[in-house]
Amino acid sequence: MSGMFGKAKSCAECNLVLLGEMGCGKSALTVKFLTKRFISEYDPYLEDIYSSEEFVDQQLVTVRVMDTFDQDGPVNCERYLSWANAFLVVYSIDNMESFERCQSYLQTLDQRNKTFKPQAPIILLGNKLDMNRYRLVQVSQCDGELLASRFGCLFFEVSACQDFHSVQHVFYEAVRSAKRG
Ligand code: GDP
Ligand code: MG
Image (tube, rainbow, N blue to C red):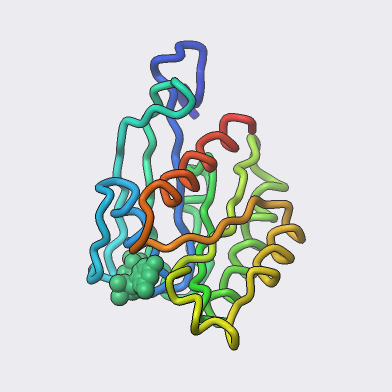
């Protein structure tokens, strides 16, 4: 892998991959991070890589974001397993199915981190926090924390349609954790 936080400080790079069930808000989070805007309707079948120059802790980093589309969970994952420096595994707090889907992603990534070097840190991310009032019957914050601790990942809850800085913070934490290795 070339130049990932390499010797020349000016050419740091970090590849982030967003994974999660269709509809959990991966594209909305990606667009929010890149443009500060919430785009409510986004082609659900679109998968793409975006690039942005970001200052993270006073260091210029080329952050590349792969906004994935997986029909059936973690199958055909070769395209991102070796490319990624860090993963954001996303679910929607108002959707238990999307949370369960995260477990299969986390298992796949756990295997990946046993075979690939360097390791790629993982952040578990509950999205749609604005739907908090509906979540009593869905995914609690405690559920998220437990799952994250089982797989040794960081955990956050955000909303793609609310505060930009909370979303930016999560992406920056992913960059920081990749830097730490
Ligand atoms: P993806 O399939 O994971 O890329 O999901 P999308 O980003 O396309 O979002 C799926 C749907 O959830 C869209 O209708 C979005 O408007 C909606 N959505 C995404 N993020 C949020 C959020 O934080 N809050 C709410 N209420 N809706 C969201
Ligand atoms: Mg999408």
